[in-house]
Image 1 (cartoon, rainbow, N blue to C red):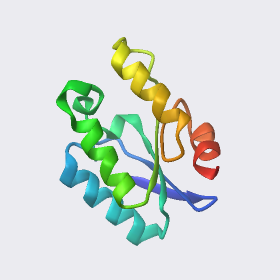
Image 2: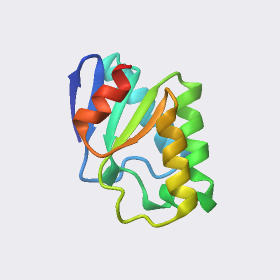
Image 3: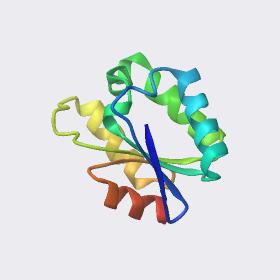
Image 4: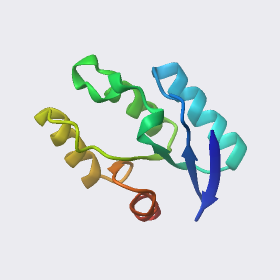
Amino acid sequence: METKIVNDIAIVKSNEIIIKDVSSAIDFIMSIQYETNCNKIALNKEAVSEDFFILSTGLAGEILQKFINYQTKFAIYGDYSKYTSKPLKDFIYESNKGKDIFFIGNIEDAIKMLSK
């Protein structure tokens, strides 16, 4: 896992899955906040379990609620073109209209959204 700070945002890239369930998400939030003193985090999509993107598992809602509870803005950056689920596309669209959780194509746009 590699982490760098840009504009008070922790940009995290990992080749391994970091967020697989609620407890791993809390560990991730707390570790990044402790190590970087940032409450804005961007993480590459490959570091998030595929189960997260299957909305019927309920995992996305539970995990994203933890980011809200811990007052942490969060962006997952990467390619979402392979997903065809309308509920997931709607979920991503609605999240991106908010102020705290974003699903973005690249790091630059993630930084823009988290900087607002």
